[in-house]
Amino acid sequence: QVQLVESGGGLVQPGGSLRLSCAVSASIFEANVMGWYRQAPGKERELVAVMPSGGSINYADSLKGRFTISRDNAKNTVYLHMNSLKPEDTAVYYCNAKFSLLGYGLKDYWGQGTQVTVSS
Image 1 (cartoon, rainbow, N blue to C red):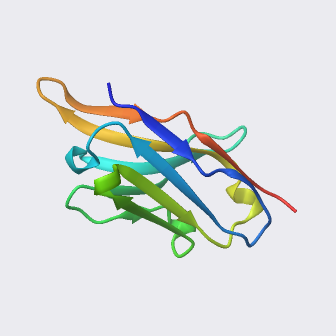
Image 2: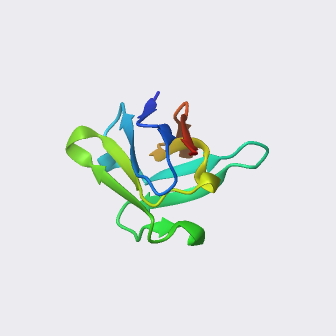
C-alpha cells in the first residue's frame, strides 16, 4: 500500500506564497503520474497540476504562471509551489499518485489533504 502525506498548508494573505510537499512511501520514479488536486467548499475536486512520467506537465488553465509542480526523486517527494495566491485558491489540496500494478492496471493513491486558506 502506497501512502502519501501532504504538508505545508496554512493561512496566507492574498498575494502570498506557499509550498506544499507530498511525501510518498514508494519510489516516485516508478509512478506513472504524480499530481495535485484541490477541492473547495461546495465544489468538486479539480485538477491543479499533473506530472506524467516522461511526459509534459499539465496545469489547470487558470493556474498557469502562478503554480509550479516539481519533484525530488531522491526524497520521493513532490512539491507544489504556489505564488500570488488569491482567496479563490482556498481549498483542501490533495496529492495523487498513479502506479501501474501488474495484473491490476493503473491504481490511484491519495493523501489525506492539506488545507490552504487565503485570507486577509
